[in-house]
Length: 342
Image (cartoon, rainbow, N blue to C red; front, side, top):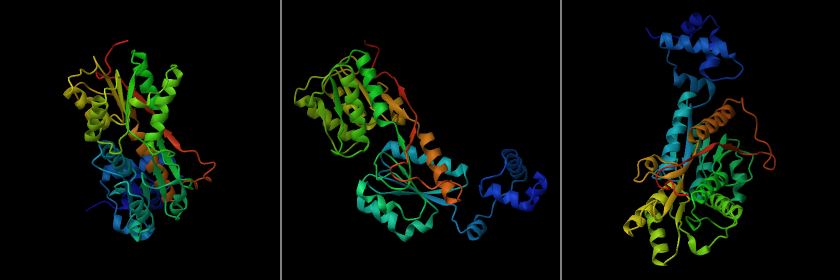
């Protein structure tokens, strides 16, 4: 016969209520007691009746992760981390793809479909600063990404500006002075493109260099094909550069392909760097120097904030003017595409 919650309580020498508090991830259980209960669960092979839990708690045990595009490697890898972090807390993840559409994101926030899950982790792309009130629905929401929507919701971001400044400083340190930028951003917005461009400009300014607009290849489609096309356009215009910084890895990898087609060697003729450290970055030839945001940290923190709100253990977000986002760590991965030149 399968083990019951009462069996677990006897094995752990605690009350059935304590076992219930542990399996339902309620706070205020002493760490030693929690560990004893979890050990008893493992020993007995106890499995929770999730249907009964949902009925008793009024919760589904599921959360939604809404991202712009799964075909972009960064978001696919982020989704994998969020699913793992949620499973560790006893939650299942429903993944929604918004396509970066403002209308789709608004629909997701307002639709009755959100009641299928207990909370939402949203990586907005189309929402604008004036849309902040749409997020304040009483439904647990955590934002990912850089758009400042001025809403009373928790927000987890990566160090876009600092990370891009670090990789630009690396290119300068190895002697590159004519650094082309592949990517674009919406003027006045605070998305990743804008913030990463700021890091690039800060590094140039600190080195006493001025930005040459001719070395910027703006493009809206942040894909490998988009990066290749942007680089081909720079080459066709005869722009001189000795390094290329892609605002994400797929842009950098696409640019590297176009350089190869043009007969240029990476890194001998042109050093190339990116941002995100997707899996392909370590296996390209040459391997790609890039900035690695701590996706696991982003996922763990976002899931923790959301699930704590769901069970009522987490604090309400402060006002938009006081609530600072949680900024995840990053590291610079120096690989073959920038070489040893100095």
